Image 1 (cartoon, rainbow, N blue to C red):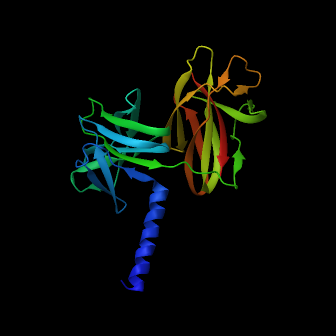
Image 2: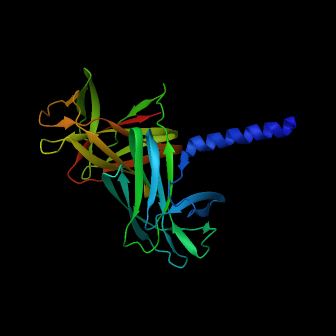
Image 3: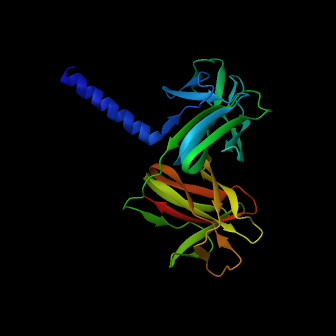
Length: 292
């Protein structure tokens, strides 16, 4: 092999590594691998797997952040918004109902089904702890067509040295948490009281959250954070948490903070305003925003 060809190969390999690291690792299901569909999106080939009657099963290792990128196929003449749903089953115990509604995205083509159009992508995220886990994607009976699914796995990133704590644009007084002898300020967020954060990129916004447990809640609870940039849905993040035994909330002896969970938003170049709310009515989370 000549040096020119060798260096070209090295450069292409490094570019591939960089792209893989940026977008996450594509996961392949352990079943129905041959039933994949290739979509051409902005001149790029993307592999999706349809959720059929037998579902899709993934075996994953944690800790990791799992992103579910879904699209719904429709006949090419139908341009309106379309609703679709599917279920995520974690370790055969926890079932998450995912519901999306998106308009048709133009200029997406399918190699297998050229007469179909496809919606904008619905992005759903879950964080999985250390260990081996099974994820099943189940079809909803009312769906006319199989939902197309692309599952990515990405390791958690380190904050590094350059980080900045952001305060919401409009908010009530902060809530102080006692954590390992230190008082740390968090901000309340709920379905009724969403928060807005202004951030500039290119950078990453990490949202730290703790569910506020009341006396009537169990030892473990789940919650979902919905993040939007204007009308664009950045993602819905699902968390399962438990009561913290080492932290407390100032002046709220009847409330207990949950163990912290986090999600991340990649911010492109420019300035943006993000809307954050909890999707579950009747639940409150305490949030903290870090830009790095």
